[in-house]
Amino acid sequence: MKSKVMNAINEIRPSLQADGGDIKLVSVNEKTGIVKVELQGACRGCPMAQVTLKQGVEAFLKNKVPEVKKVVAVD
Image (cartoon, rainbow, N blue to C red; front, side, top):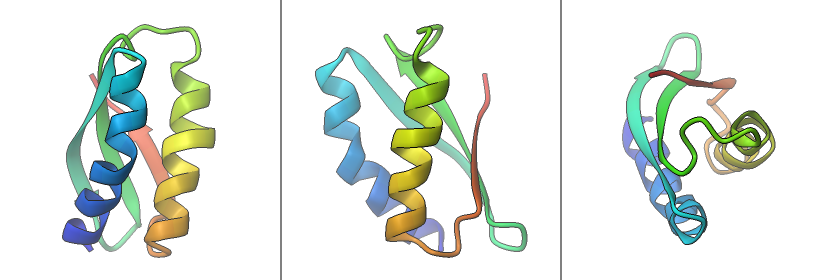
């Protein structure tokens, strides 16, 4: 599952980088389906980061990797 999540993150990464941000995979819990990521660059501290995380990253990952149940940002 981790490799599928990493591949999906690599697909969405250019969109984040286009706005001066980036994303780093921190961990994948295969039992719970929780993916932890670190938002970087302009995404870190951006007022829209939570929207980007939930409606962008989480929705994309759930679509690409159905085992993903939730995406959480960590510092």
